[in-house]
Image (cartoon, rainbow, N blue to C red; front, side, top):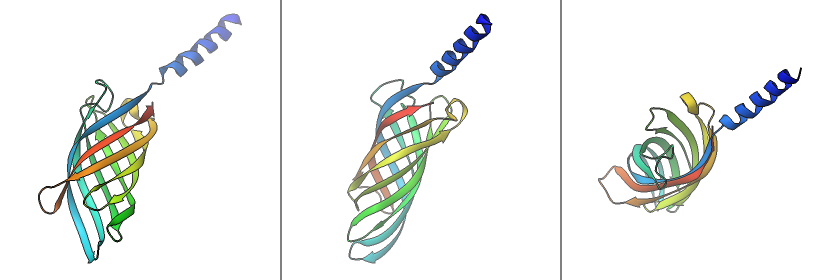
Length: 158
């Protein structure tokens, strides 16, 4: 009976310790194709689809040397927005993927800030969860495209 009890306790502790968690602070640049409806006076509806490459300040983080593909949208009212929403897929160096949902606010043509929630992944990250903050600074580029410097930081557990 003691052996069985010991085995149950050992397996419980072993399974608990298998969960990994960490922090990340990744930054990089991206380009986004735009679809916009301009209503004048700083009023506009925008959807976008694009990609960015990211490096983490901590080499070896799961988001280090990753790329992300995001699709989202926002509505400008007098040049400002507070309704940005979208989803991103992160393509990680180990071949797996992580998915996030995000929300943001900011100023058209300049940038914005927001929050995100990690909603899942593939392979060993299938049950990943976490959250964090994001920001972007728009930079000038080709017409019909948005170009930005992006920063994302947060915590995760899988």
